[in-house]
Image (cartoon, helix red, strand yellow):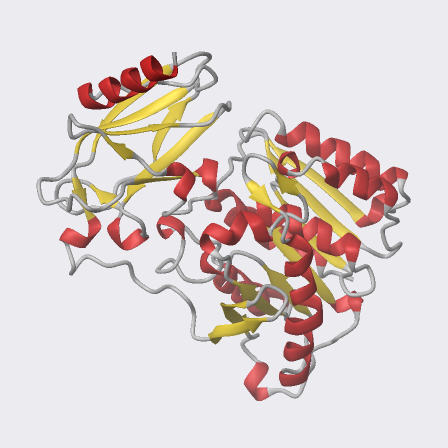
Amino acid sequence: MKMWRGLFALLSLFLGVLVVPAEAQVTVEVAKVPEKTPLEDTLFLAANLNHWNPRATRFAFKRAANARYYLTLPGGEGALEYKITRGNWEKVETLLNGTGRGNRTYKVKPGRDTVRIEVENWQDNFPTTTKDHTATANVLILSNQFWMPQLKQSRRIWLYLPPNYATSDKKYPVLYMHDGQNLFDAFYSFGGAEWGVDESLNEQFESNGREVIVVGIDNGGEERINEYSPWRNKKLGGGKGDAYVDFLVQTLKPYIDAHYRTLTDKEHTGVAGSSMGGLISFYAALKYPQVYGKAGVFSPAFWFAPEIFDFAAKTKPAPDLKMFLLAGAKESKQMVPDMARMRDVLVKQGLKPSNLKYEVHEDGEHTEAYWQREFPRVFKWLFSR
C-alpha cells in the first residue's frame, strides 16, 4: 500500500496534478510567470493570512513538472488578500509595465477550490521603479542592529520625536509600537502600506499641542508570529512573546529613558499594535501593569492564542489602565466576538468602564489603511487626561 501511495504521488507530480489534502479549502495555481523568472527562485504567497510576510516558508509554492506553481492553503474562512513574491518586497509581482498591482482577493468557499492566476512581471525587472521614502524629518532610525539579549538577535528600532523636541527641555510621554516597518515609511512597509503615524502626530501637535515620543520596533519577519505570542499555536508557531515583552521592559525602555527626555512613569507610557501586534500589546499591558498605563489594541489576534482569555481572567488589570479595543466588522468572523468576550472579561476583572474604550466599525477591514484611519482617535483618547 505504501509503495502504491508513493508511486501515485510521483505520478501526480510528474503530470503536474496537485493532490489536495482533505481539509484544504483553496489551492493557488500560478499558471504563468515572466519568461526571465529564475528557475532557482521560490515563489511565496504574502497575504493577510500570514501577516504579509514575503518569505513565509509555510506559504512557499512548489514548482511542478508542468512548469506551474502550486500552493494549498490551510483551512480558513473569510476574504483572502495576497500578492506573489520571490522572497522579498523588491521582488514582488507587478503589472506588465512595472506598475504596482493592488492586492489580489479571493473569498474563501466551502470545500475545495482552485484559483489560477498569472504573474505579469516582477518589481526587480524595473530597477528604476522604486517606492519613495515617506517618513517625515523628525523620524530617526535609532539603530539598525539594536541588540535584544532576551531573544539573542538584533533589530531595527525607529524613533519619532515631537517637532519641538530639539528646541525644548521638556520631558515627553512614550508610546511603544510593534511592526516598526509599517509605522512611518512606505518604503519599508508591507506592500507600500503604512500607518502614517508621524504625519498624524505632527498634525495633532500643530492643532492641539499633543506631544509624544514613539518607539517603533521592527518585527522579525518569519519570527514575527513567534515573538508576538507568549503561547505556542501548534499549527502556526509562537511562544517567544514573554521574551519579547521582557526585552521591551528590561532592555529597550531603560535605554530610551536614559538617552531621551521621557516621562518614565506608567501614566505616560503606552504600548500599541495591530493583529498579532494587538495580541502582544494586550499581553504586555497586563503582564507589566507597573510599566504600561495605556494600550492601543487594534484588531487583536486573540484567536491565535486562546490561552489569553484564561490569562486575562486570572490577572487583575491595573485600576488606572486605559485600554482601547478596536476592530472592524469586515475582518474574520471570530474577530468581533473574541474582542467582545475580552471586553467582558476585563470589566469583570475590575477595569473601570470609563478606562475601557470598545469600538467596532462596520466598514473596518484587516488592513493598514483601516488602522491608519483610526490611529489618531485612539492616540488622542489614550493620551488625554
